[in-house]
Length: 289
Ligand code: GLN
Image (tube, protein in one colour):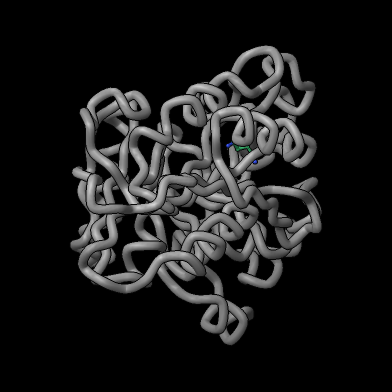
């Protein structure tokens, strides 16, 4: 029998098999996951050998990754805005780009009990939970059309002990009756139906319903924009994530729907990613909610 490989050798062999740019990190994450240890432990114990079972399980996880399965689905976890989130193939994998939406929202949400925020298409709950955590006095409603996604989002809220989020099964505003919010946020599907990227990388494994939205990718964005003003308080904000090349169209749609103070923000990669617009209505004595 050949000698058992050390952790160092296992990782080296894995890196040579993985094609990803992040091979070293991914190999470490897979082994950490099986051994229930952190990266520092792995480095400190690189001359150790592991059980046969761990060796076999590591090989199996490696093969899944080599076959293209996203690392987040294999681990069942992804970090987003400092939150450790459960993810499954029922949910989109939270992306760093979406942290731009959270930051844009937090900059416009005060921490007081009167503020209500809705996150449309919450998936793992990433956006809703990040906002709720940083604005503990505010009330957040997180909506999704998928029961499976809402179960994960609920589990994430429990795990993170975030209690100011309420989850609602709904297609966009359908089950929210006449409720009005101070802020509406959404990272809806926005990829063009025939975009070649859909057959590449992680996107192949993610729910289509969370990714694509008609020929120009804007079907859901149009639907949300057209229905938002009646769900916004006077001076309330609509904030949408969109594709890198959709900012102008989203701004036009918002402008045509009657929004004002329209502005686009870039993600950390320098791409236009989030466009916001304000309800022009000003509160007066005739206003009744
Ligand atoms: N930003 C993601 C991507 O292009 C798509 C997420 C979405 O459609 N909301 O991979």
